[in-house]
Image (cartoon, rainbow, N blue to C red):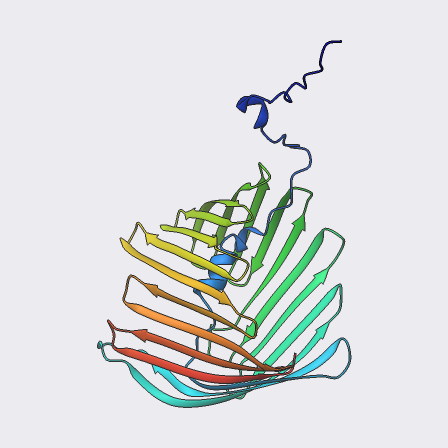
Amino acid sequence: MAAFIPQPPATASPAEAIKPEKVDYMDLPCPIPYEEIHREAMMSLKPELFEGMRVDFTKGLNQRFSLSHSIVMGPTELPSQSADIIKIPTANYEFGANFIDPKLMLFGRILTDGRLSARVKCDLSENLTMKANAQLTNEPHMSHGMFNFDYKGSDYRTQFQLGNGGLLGASYIQSVTPHLSLGGEVFWAGQHRKSGLGYAARYNTDKMVASGQIASTGMVALSYVQKVSEKVSLATDMMYNYMSRDVTASFGYDYILRQCRLRGKIDSNGCASAFLEERLNMGLNFILSAELDHRKKDYKFGFGLTVGE
């Protein structure tokens, strides 16, 4: 009887082992809005820096309605013809009211200097959203308002804007692959008799996000975010104006720890900044802000507290 000799399992060739992923172009993901294509880079590189002291308190009256109080004390920069920076001490109190519903959100703010601002977000249908924001001031020609209508399709988004001063704008962004989306915008400023076009591209994976944007106004914006881990991200961006030949590049980081979040950057103008948010307790956060502009010799430091969720 002949002995049975087991044969080794058949191995696939390298060409057969690595098969390209089939893409269903009829089932592409919906892209993010055109105005947010640099969202990850903005979160890392442009936190809300401030100077002086800030205290924010939010009190929820029920599940949908809450009141907010904010006190800001710090210097304010005045425009100057010279290179010297002129600052005067100021203090402001802001009172706000918030209404948050699954289909309707209302935010109102009023400051002691007379400024009044309001924001509205309303879901008119499952795919159509209306956004509105307005700011009223005592200064002439400084009040403004704008309406946005955002339509969300299965693999595209389109937006129409209408603002005071004869401002009209429209944008469209389309997913062309599971990771790549392309879009464009057009706007008309009737008050200034100016129009413009813009184009944008965004490529994102689980580990990185790369975005580029160019407009006929002369602005070119590039950004790249690398997700080193679940808690660490590195970001860089470049802004170039081919009309004035001005260019600015920056590099920053975003580090999320167990109880805090640290963000910082340094740019080509010699300006370094850092922003720390520390959770001291449930509903209590401590904030540190620092910005060092070595070229202008302008140094800003701030600290604050955020109370309430």
